Length: 440
View (cartoon, rainbow, N blue to C red):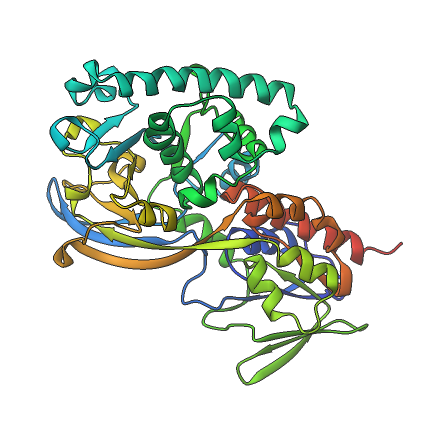
């Protein structure tokens, strides 16, 4: 993906943001531009955030990297990432994409209902659900949902695809149990946003993503993978190529004129020929002095959801029935107000990544119950884009922004919000920049 050096004077390019998009752009421009990478935080990688953890293993204490943000990918829908990891000679391992749901008070005798889709035994982890007609109706609706969505994905009917998910669920008379015990939990696991926001997503966003990723198919599902030892390994290899890289250097202001770009950081201002903004769209907009009306309209159209992530070893957050434990574990809130404001997920890292530890290691997103302090390893704040209709419409017009005022924009927010989307957009921004700099 990277280019070869040339003898001509290289253009100075500022890349703002070191997540997958910024790193992809830097890798594509390697040797073809004089790059400076700006990162506001104290590590490179953005949502690729690997933490070295020391815990008991089979032969005593062992230290190993665990991922707290980006975790998995597949060969079907992550072609650019597959190519990048192969080029960088980064090792990978098979992962698990099993999914569980815990709903307080919905089980027999007022217990929490729990089930997992791993196999028939885990579906009926609570044997009482064999006689629970609401649960059985949910299972029937899952089959019907998969059939309807597959047909819609293949037909791509515009009127049906533009409606919000809330209308889609009503139009097809799906049960409340299907919505609350399966559909919204699955959507929450995918997009890390609360139920009220998910119900406003256009049907097209959900159906196309789920169909492409094999989530609404019983057969022909893709194999999921993870980076062995943590995704930091690809970050380190790309960052090593960049001579001018700056941590803890937030860009305060970006000024643009006919000659190029002026980047202002704390106590310093520098000139560049071009800038690639590889931050969230709202962050990029906030850096620009005198943004155009188009930049304001498009970059400002995408909202973000803040999420708190806790890395810990407290397995009490998982379903009581161990057979229902899965890689992705959704916990529904008791109060509907909580459910409407934040999604609660527990990622069981031992199932997602090959770890040498003898105890469960988890990342909990917005935990509903307090995690025991002695079990907490680290905490992080992440933000995820919200793909409502306004965001989808803005995405369709992003080409209008590229290259104007020597500026290029990229990020996972340009697609579905996933690693492949960020990587693809970073590559596209770099290639557009190179085309614009080429002699006519």
